[in-house]
Image 1 (tube, protein in one colour):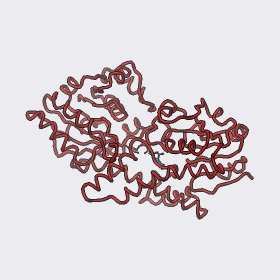
Image 2 (cartoon, rainbow, N blue to C red):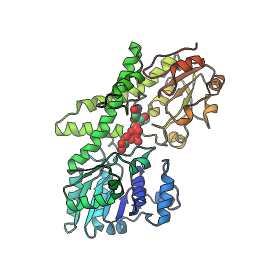
Image 3 (cartoon, rainbow, N blue to C red):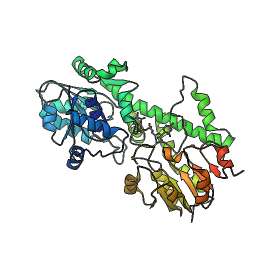
Image 4 (tube, rainbow, N blue to C red):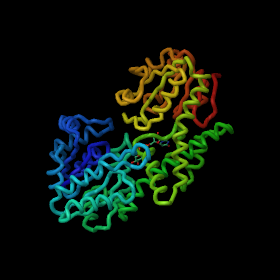
Length: 437
Ligand code: UDX
């Protein structure tokens, strides 16, 4: 099959490279000339484990190429994927669909022969219909269908998620479109990955509902963590205790500083706006979104309390990205926590294994090159992201480096009893605070 992938952001690049790994011929298109030039030189604009290898192998096989020219890519394609950004619109939180409709209009001009146009970008219910209307208005003669095929890729494990998804969702009423998508996902189909065919509207909603549900699970356990702290319970035991119930499941029950990233914050907001608009308010999602926003400030206050007031203190921060194995800073809790600490008189020095370049675009702080130099002579350390290299710190050395043996661990990567034994005051999330024994 011949595929045109419009947009070489995170989703477009991963999907394009992986489709070509499946044996299809893929042309990835982006308006950004410098990005396309870089990709042609073999440079990957984002940090995603394994992506460079898949891209290199596919380019070498001749099945993956890059271009700024949408026309020829669309003209030759059996399937055209729209994988452009749908950021939150400033002011109202609705998904901004400017790029989606721009792409639809450009695609319309070049359609040649039967083509299925697939929205992979996360778009509100009804967008598929509007894309179809846009293309139809521009090209009354064109032979095409518009399908929805949401992605469920997690940053940091996107390649693995593409190769071994829990399910594939395809929304279309057209048998011809279904046939092409079935063929595109054939290697997974043969592996017995469930392919769920639904209406376009259901497919569009599945993406939002999945993200909102996961965000709810996280927010629920975060609230339980607050409760645990008040009543002397341990949130990890509570999570395990409820998670072993097959109806609940143990995943996405790690308490922390609140969810961030490119999807959950913007998708929960967009979903609740849609609910308001159509007269079916999603009260649970609304609460989740609010609680999560407030939580980031609560976490800064928690750090303040642990330090006995951060004013005049030097704080070592380990991790800035919204989660490990990515350089993505979008909606990371650090974007709220670090400025809060600074506004309250703290000096922040920080280190992130992959996120420094992105972090410096959004935050001002003393940049450190590694963990040791971050810790040296600080009044305490705060763990904001659970990168592997922060999971096995030598505590004797850490204690030596810090002025005060104080750790605030917002990801619960250490055990309170061991930290107490190692001589630390250790504050974590939803577990008792311990002092040196
Ligand atoms: C998410 C969805 O998982 C994915 O299916 C969708 O396509 C895009 O959004 P991603 O944002 O890459 O993926 O990361 P994910 O691993 O889901 O984590 C999102 C946020 O939730 C992170 O801030 C993470 O730290 C937080 N989280 C996750 C928790 O706080 N606790 C958990 O138990 C799980």
